[in-house]
Image 1: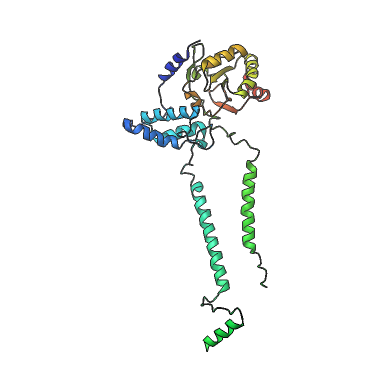
Image 2: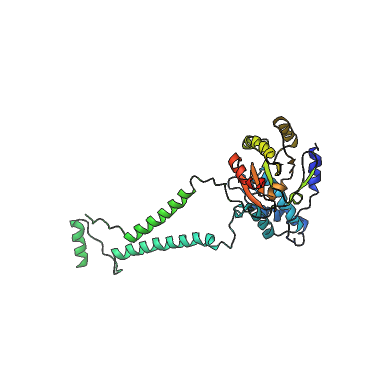
Length: 155
Length: 176
């Protein structure tokens, strides 16, 4: 039985990379953390409820976060890293749907726009119904005194 | 007294259609396990790995080409993993041509070692301390089991504990 530290040390030397994908030039060292944060914020923690890999403290997320960091430092782009995780977990792993699914992005705007148009048409319709000509409406007298008062004013 | 307003039929029908569609979508989701998503890895080549087992022997998937391989991600803190352990032990002896491999997921090797000494072990268990193999296989939790055909393709991924019927059905081809 090998001790855990030996297994860890052996695996630490394992090269980091995405099979069949060529990385670009590595980013400057002071940008690695910011780039990692950006990529990890868009990945869903597989064992949490609605948390990103960047925000979760679960062991799985920490391991995914470290993997993202190593890939970023090796020069892989956000798109390449996202594609890697999608190829393993499916699109579910992305917190925001991909831009190619335009219907998912457009549907809320479309439905919202239709709703506003419908409410607007109801408001306009009800105004026209109560005052078709659009003329100023004369006040209606509420009692005999007011009726008499209005008649005298008209004279 | 004002006249009662007549219902707008078009609005009523439109509202009913929209509500009905929404209810149908929600109803179709009930009774489904939200985590039971089909794996994107099925029918695709299994990711290569080079890992050491708990005895220090090196294992690589490409060296197992031509054989059925069953990879079971598990841990000692996972109750369903414990419940399926006897089934995997008996399957490993029933299907000697199939290479069974356990992969330790988010666990401590001494605990795994103690568990296997107490409950028996019939196949190698690989250490995955950095979780890289679990990520490569898209594992989100345990137990998850992958059935890899002789050509290196992932035939099936089972999320959750295995049952005997499923295991036998999937390995039927391995006996031929």
